[in-house]
Length: 81
Length: 364
Image (tube, rainbow over all chains, first blue to last red):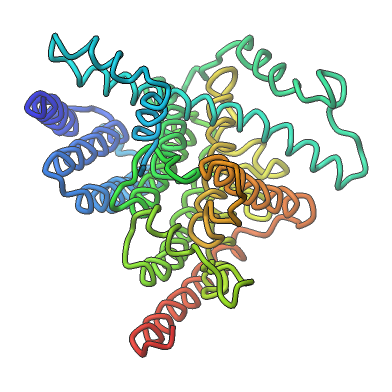
């Protein structure tokens, strides 16, 4: 049972991590990054490390991704040469 | 009994049907399916409860505003207008779902779900009563704070994806406010954790049972008055209600970050907002106002009385938030941020320091 869950979560995490670098739009990248972080938190949960998992969600998804989104939105989009 | 799962099994056993149901699954070795079914039933009950509560809260909000302004409020649909939220829901479902032409469609469609799901997830470790809790997480309070920290992302994405200057401004304000008020909120909650030595919501509630001198209940509001005040102000700011409703201040920003949303997606933001109002009030009750603790009445099961006490206290807090909305004017964004960073956070840190000293010195 837990192997199946592990497989699903890891595939999703790797997929999201791949999409972070593949996405054309920076905001989309940031969303995928949030997905990858949540996937990592899920892996921590599988290891029964609840505190680390929710601290991961709080710090990385709640703060880091928000700040990244904030920065992307407040700066001018690079014009094509 | 510790959670709702065991409560359901106990009820089934008392009815004498649990063994019968278990026998149906046992031969094929699929007991985990039964477990899964019970969990799904629990979550469905919780979801239905939240939806009904949200509908009731919208009605209550209108009635409280009407009461303050010497009006009747909704009166026509149903007894005293009680069916008004149903009509509103039908109206919203029937509306056209508009996506602005220049909007980022993927993000625009994703954002309401990102607001709605955390608003429901917060209820998982919330003790509605003795053993009326979906799951008693060991790090319940951290979980609640972490899940609440997900809402700004949704707001930011909604504001940006709508491609509208008002939505973007509303989103910026909302996130600046959320980030600056999460810190005093968490710091105020930590002082309570220092007393209980546990992040579990059930432990926090049971630490508040009993009384001093037989009259004063052992609620944390009496040990931590400053912490309570900080938590109350910060949670009203987190909810984004007047006097802190900059994210949607209608006289300046049309409707803030969800200006461009219509139909079901607007309804989802609406649902998330009221679910959040109820959840934050419930958390405030759990941490500072004794949770489901109250005088035990003979002859009535504790499950029922505790649920009644919890709902009474939570609705008192909800009523306070609504009352505040009707009597206090909106602040300015610079005032809000000044109060957050220059007054609330230093006070919260001071509170933490003094509490730490007092606990170490063994005074409390």
